[in-house]
Length: 464
Image (tube, rainbow, N blue to C red; front, side, top):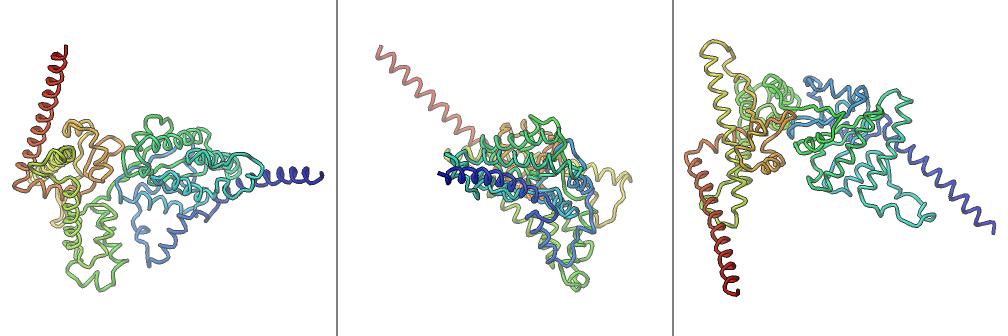
């Protein structure tokens, strides 16, 4: 008889200890040096002889550093920019500066079960899967699914943040990187709303700052609907002077000394020619800089980009009705890219006119800085006539949309590839052929539908 009370008391003690241990483990996730993402980043830096980023500090880095130090309490952030511009790198650099103290970093994933596990890893939380409390309860805590598990994790984080923020005198930071990887359906948007609700509450209390990082526009658009305390930060490409400095630094750190001084491909004229192809995209600069022939590498990237564009939105003249929807998408996409090319031509004409008038002076090797052509979102809807296609183009990294709802080609490389296709002799005729063929197929479908309706109507009259 004495065993039953002992087991009962032991169970109560175990449950209370387990709850305390869970909060203690989550608190350790915000301690200095814990974050797994930071450990991986530091391991990569140890293998590099010299990190070029220490020689080129971007203007947005100071703002991100303040966020990671917990100095931007009372708000949360959406960091948006095209893929490869360095958003994640700057966040990790800011975490490295504070040794990830007070910061947790979680990578998003389209599968919510995987996202649940990644959030648990970032927070050092096991979702009660390491607990023996199942002996004292009827239901399995895992029966609720990923969304309820994430809610449980956020509840625990809130308790820890309330305690830690008082002791440390600063807000904690929770980063959700690549949040665009969540699916743009009901389940993905529900999770995003769930995270945003906590971000709003934590920002209002000043205990924790949430940072959402995204390559695509749709998460920002979804967050903006219910945002009160959200701040946006756009990360774009490097300027021409910054891109040239980065290219030289990466080249110096990556190639042997003989490769960066003795070869003709490394002289400034060749490097500027390469940058006029790839632009200021950091990921592309890294690929070109690590090649012993930068111009050849840039042209290779351009050819690959052009072939990739054609594989995604290639035009099929005299297409069959089975691919009509796909060709609608392709023809509308090329209408938008054609508009970007026309905008670029106007920019070049204005630049040439200014140079002829003596208003601009530049070195012979350096092309004057021309921003990527931008078209307002509403205007793109009119050009394409199918606004639902814009989100898919953004997801495929063919276009990018900034926080001001201006649409641009994803990169200068994409613009150059599209321009080569648009300036081909048969492009206009091919595009018009596809659009005419789509009109013919749609007209034929409408005729068939009308014929069927007339037949059914006449049959009904005959029966009457």
